[in-house]
Image 1 (spheres, rainbow, N blue to C red):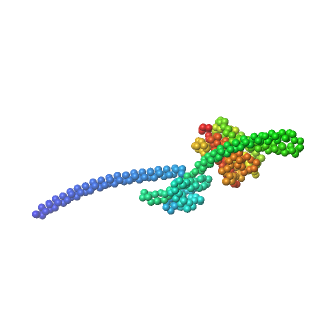
Image 2: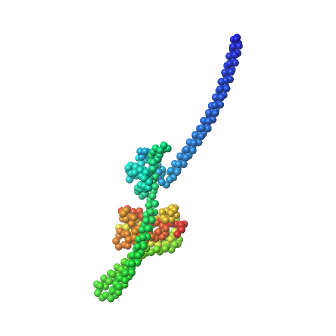
Image 3: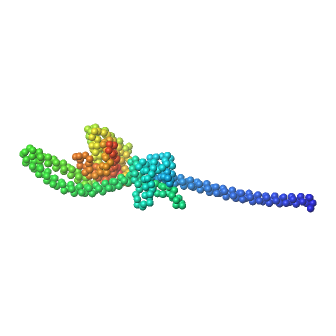
Length: 406
């Protein structure tokens, strides 16, 4: 083969190899394009999944932050991993400040040992949550383990529930039940006492007319006076037990309060007591019995005056709220607060102040606040008290607004 032929064949082989390479390069370009398309699709799907995950995370976070119960999640060591806004409000702390710190710093009354008790109580069905008092609230706390998919524990979730309102409603129910039983018993006793009292007063009055001796007349007069005092107490008792229905009409509570204060201001001046009244900006009509409600307000005001023997101040204010703690449930209500600077009520007496015949002052029947409770119960209202020795007393009366049925 000549050199020319050899050169021709070499060029032919080179061209063939070049064509093969070009074909391989074209195939490789197609594969790269296909891979790029697949990668673009995967990237798009990944971005979509990340966006969905972020959206779901934000959604769940919003749900967590919107809960009216407190939620605290801790790791195995008891350090706070996350907590929602409600739990931070209950503990009066900032969420960021306590993250990573031990949960025992939230409440002074709960040591690490007590938090462990709350956690282990979850393994005993029927066990009630642990209750604590914190800044005027009663909190019930439950604990439950947080488990991974493989079943291993990752920490603990604690649920905090504000049961202050529930406790008040339970107290009201118990108080109403107790008052009903005591009222029935008191009515029977009052009727049994009143008949012989009438006889004693009658014969004592006859003796008073016939007796000539001044000393004997004085003794008979004291019998008549004492019997009248006893009869007055029995009358109060019957008023307490009597089921007298209110005469409902549309009334303005501010007008009733102003009428009551006309009488009370004179007593306040005599007792060196500063009396003030701040009504709500808008009128709050209710359906009720004006005379009965006057009796309620006057009883509370006189109680406040008696708690300030050396003078002081009594401030009355009204507020309108959208949801209340009266028996009307979520019905809008009028809140009336009577706050005095008196000697206060000892904590051990707070649960008894609405009981019939309970009084810390001599010479009183102990029926005033019991009658107040009964009247408010007839009006589908409620009364709460906040007090303590030496810190004054605040009575809060709740009355459903006119929009509710009487």
